[in-house]
Image (cartoon, rainbow, N blue to C red):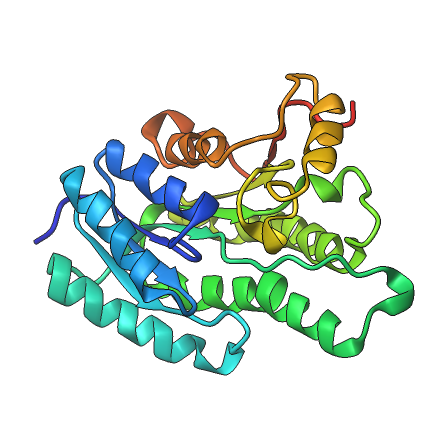
Length: 253
């Protein structure tokens, strides 16, 4: 029987999710990571995790396809059995996301529904369907955003879904506490990745402005976030529950 801890990380093929998986691997935690279309990037992350001495598998997952979540969970179950000789995992990190800058006056119902499916509905039902195959004492980490605290024009839909996730996480913590499980929110600020079309990386003026509005004087990097996820999955974080932890370097104080 497998004795190592295992994490399921959605959106683990690049950016924040990749760094989360690598940070967990450095603490001895294996992982299943997901990707939407870019299998090559996901396979590269798997190889990096294996180079750190942990096992990893990459699975396709489309967060816009709510009807396919149960099929995905069945694949996770078979992967746990074939790779780790177990039927359960320990940590769920709901990280998969898409970015879109859409002014309220220009938002369409289709755009609203897409962001809702990815950031709220898929998180809710993936979590629901993961719980039966998670170990007691496990951890769930839902990724939110600094935009639930401060306002950025064009992010009304995205931030609304993330605010809903923050409320969901508190209810989740209440309902799974009897199993010794915790649920927390991690809310990054401005991070220089390829998220939302690499909006920060490709715009030096925006990057400079955001850095000027951050107490630590720079925008974040993916490496600023992965270690926090690893900490939240550690024994030392066992008493942290139902909390929103913002990791923004002190933005818009």
